[in-house]
Image (spheres, one colour):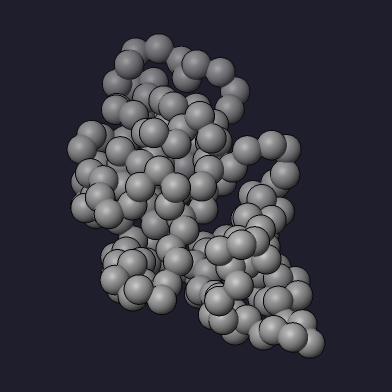
Amino acid sequence: TLVWTPEPQEGRIIYEREKGCPWPGEGWWGRIESLEPPVLPSPAPACLLNQQVARTLGEAWDDLDSRVVVLTGRARHLHRRILEILHELGLDFLGDDDLICKRGRLDTFEFKTKVIRDIIYGPEGCGITKLHIFEDRDAHVAAFRSQLAPSLITPDRVITTHVHQVFPS
């Protein structure tokens, strides 16, 4: 997690208290309201930024041998708002192509794994030898380590994979 946003239970309470009406619908992660005031202030406060991940992201961005991609389980139609939030938090070097939002019916882990493989085995991935993944979900950390990392070692190529578990800062 690069930016800590309210979870559904907390966010719905904020929304209903401030708006004076019930949360509009059942979902959370795919709704624009979960990323807008009053749930998420605008501009986004700096305390929401995971400083550890942001620092590493900036260092990787400055390394000309790196390809930086931010993957999110948030739905594709939220891309513009997510990019606005990242820019509000000082990550304005990230552009449209550097943020990839979930689309389709894959769960978040499957989506992220597919994108990573597509990049590594696609035309721009031929020189990739090292991969850093920052993840907050315990199950995803374990799955990236046990399923994805071993699959990136082939007879003609080894991609060293580092999976970093992140926690609220």
